[in-house]
Image 1: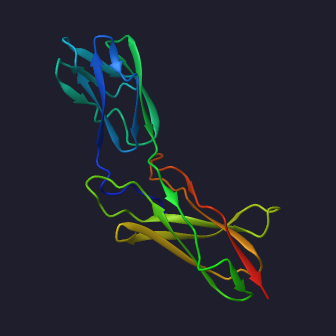
Image 2 (image 1 turned 45 degrees about the vertical axis):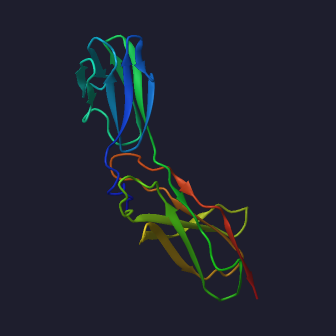
Image 3 (image 1 turned 30 degrees about the horizontal axis):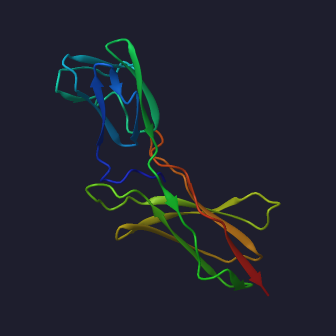
Amino acid sequence: MLAFPADGSALRAAAVTLTPSGPSPIVLTVPAGGYPIWINHDQVAHTVDLANGLCSIRVAPGEIKGCSHGVSGFVARYPYTVDGTIQASIVVVPEPRAVTLAARGHRIQRGARLTLHGQVTLPVLSPPAPPSPQPVTVLARHDSRHAFRRIAVVVARPHGSQLLWQLRVRPRTTTVYIAEANSQPEGGQFWQQARSRPFTVLVTS
């Protein structure tokens, strides 16, 4: 199962100003799902050409224009030129994401079950929209001599404005757990890779 951007992640504009001395900033950083626009504050028209050939616009004085097809909502770098000479670029960076892992305590009796639970945190978009479910991978290891191994994939589901997940486990010995939220929508990277802090469960006889 793949994680998709929330329904409220409609295009969010980030502006480049066209001036007599060139575009400002030269490198514009846009969050995934964002949308670059060019605002001409000069007295003459300027032409913006993306290096991928998917967009070419002429921006008249006082005009605002964007490239709706040349820049995707996924993480990437998009070089472009202004008037065929000035080199600049749009850099799409991943949206932040975090995941937590907790339980009622760090110590259980051998043979007992324990419910691990946590939350996936995404940016609050404007306008607000219910977050979409996201898969969470739970990994475990018994000690530092061993690598973490995947034990389950669960789904963090909306609960009000939060994405909550849980998993019941029955460790046979002391175990360290972590949770990861690393899936991406089809087509490219949208979210940051996220990993929880380790949670150690001590098993006593």
